[in-house]
Length: 366
Ligand code: GDD
Ligand code: MG
Image (cartoon, rainbow, N blue to C red; front, side):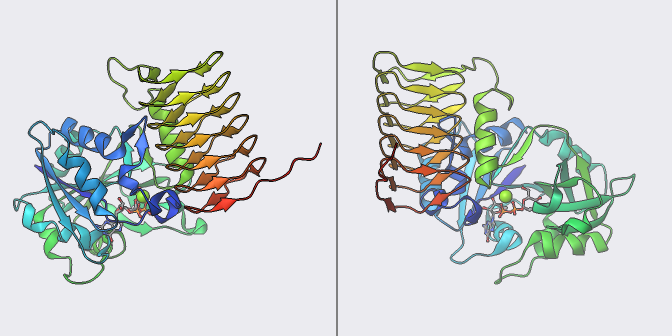
């Protein structure tokens, strides 16, 4: 059985990072998210996948071109304009074998047992079986009401707060019969959540399967950072040989550097005198952390530079971005690629700075 991985969306809630890096490629513990996705599909016994690409397809395709997938097949279907979640599935039809397939949203990190999902699907006459997970606030997801037999009674995408009747939501992992592809109109944007699932529900052919495994959609800064913390702390089925302290041999540490695991520091990083790095942080390749600077609970993309005395906490620093001397970036702030936060600035409360923006230094008064 093959999978379709939907990775064509713009990742707009994860901007400014996704202006340059597609959501599917953001790193978790210094490995692109797609690496975890393929492990997940292989663990589920699938033989290969078709990527449904649209926005920024090249970095995703190049990543897989350079990987040895050990017999797992990978095909690519690129749309020239957004076709929506159902249109994106239909666009992969030529690569599917006319049998049932698994479809996954390409931004879901999970420990769902795909074998169980497929078995649940095969035990009924459903044309589609959705995996459900429970969340605190269903308003950002597809709400799914089921009966005692797991027949879906209602599928409501992004319910308003007063429409919430259950905490079970669509986990973005489906088993679909080939007939479903025939229900998707060609040549226009079609949403599986807003058009196809309600149609299948009305026909009594949509069923569900509940999973209690780890599950997270990485599509917002908060959830991406939380997923990064989880992967670094081994909360996502870490497997054997997991190291809480992952520091590449090439990393240069000057005197007095404090490294607090869990942490991942990639090749070529330089940690200056008395710098503190860790507390569930991941530093990409060639990052520089200056003298006395602190990086905690954060993600630094490749080439980020944290100058002497600066503090970065619980934030996301895009590729080649620079945090100036004694500046503070905290509270889930997100810096786009190549931007500069001048000396002495304080960024807090989820501030997002677009790629290339330069914030001038702020003089400090004592
Ligand atoms: N090929 C293609 N074309 N892919 C797309 C398109 C498109 O036009 N639009 C979105 N996608 C991909 C995204 O890249 C993502 O991997 C996946 O489809 C889901 O899109 P999101 O934009 O992340 O949707 P969401 O998170 O708001 O909601 C979806 O996921 C939830 C679970 O995480 C829905 O399926 C919800 O019902 C669900 O609960
Ligand atoms: Mg999503």
